[in-house]
Amino acid sequence: MEVLKTDIDGVVIIEPRIFKDARGYFFESFSQREIDEKVGPRASRKGSSTRK
Image (cartoon, rainbow, N blue to C red; front, side, top):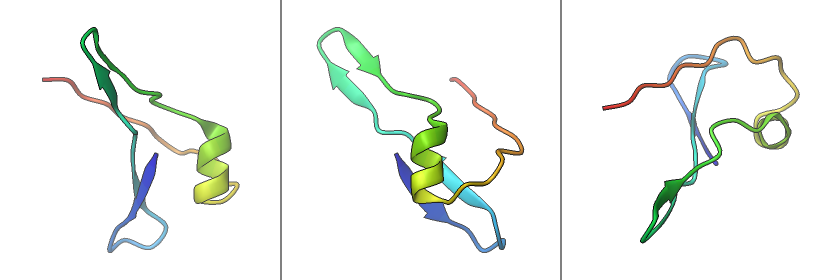
């Protein structure tokens, strides 16, 4: 998981690591433990996802 800072104080973009092979791909869309480690122990306020 990669955490990207934004120009808005307290707002970050969290991008998952994507694992690909011949069968397709896999990613963990949410891990509170990893978010706590990388961003700090905060309550998640909102999560969104989209697909093409």
